[in-house]
Length: 232
Image (tube, rainbow, N blue to C red; front, side, top):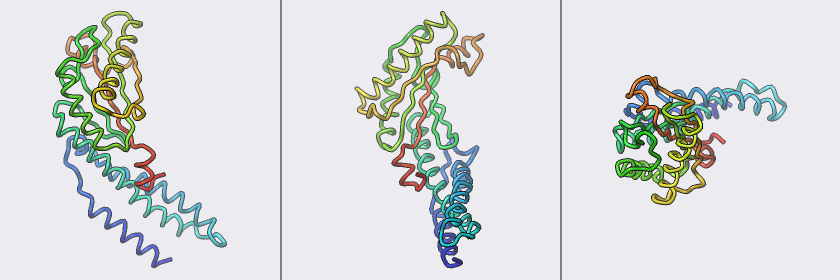
């Protein structure tokens, strides 16, 4: 057992030492690989304890927890590193976009100041928005083992019903462009819309309304990435 634990610990340390910690704005405030390591270690420890109690004659929960914790740490680091690299690439390609790494997700927010935007009551993509989505699509296709969630939002100008329909049309415009124009597999994309119900800024000012007329794109690992990272 000591030999096994020693080898597993060495393997985890090698993983930690060989991962290059990214310096992008999305990750510099909170190190997601470290978060992933903690989450992975905790989950792995629990699984390891269960395995330990069910191997042989049982009574090995402590050893199982240690093994699971070591393996789980490596799993979390690998998954976090892959998502961090993708977030950094998006920041490099689209400097104006707001890119956040939260848990295992990448959240990209586009508003009137960041590349994909809609004028009041507008539902069609303009040339600037298309060029920005071209860059995003290239990154999405470079990292195929993810799911893409497109969300449409509006300000509060107009009726609640019309804004809900407007946010639907805007989200669908982005989805159609990624699918038909850029060849992103539609099976990876989920589209939703929320109208004026989820403002992130005050609608009392023109600047706030401009920021609320937005499209959010969330990127999550799919089953293949989770499996290859050891997390599924």
